[in-house]
Every structure is written in structure tokens, then in C-alpha cells.
Length: 71
Image (cartoon, rainbow, N blue to C red):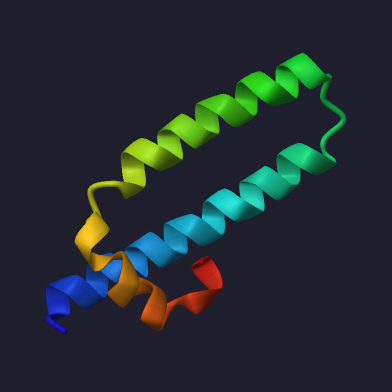
């Protein structure tokens, strides 16, 4: 694996961890259903756009071999 690929994978993993932690915070917050839903949708869109450029669909199997907990 190249150093560039290793860095991209690590950054992807760290972002996944941050997003999961934030989703947990949303679930624990005392937000109304509508407010929580809108916030969750915005964060999901951000996650999708932010992560799709770091690991291509062709690389997902390699990525998951290194970070299986993200499956």
C-alpha cells in the first residue's frame, strides 16, 4: 500500500469515528423528532460527500481489511 493510500484510509477511518460519535450525540440530545431528523439528514449528506472522495468503491475491500470495524 502506498503512503498516500495509507493516509487516505486513516483519514477516512478517523472521519467515520467522528461521524459515529456525533450521531450518538444526536441520539442522546433532547431534540424533537423533526429537529433530530433534519440534523441527522444534514450530517448524513455531509458524511456522504466528504467520504466519497477518500476511498473509491474499488478500494472498499482493501479498506475494510484494515478497518473491519467500519463494516
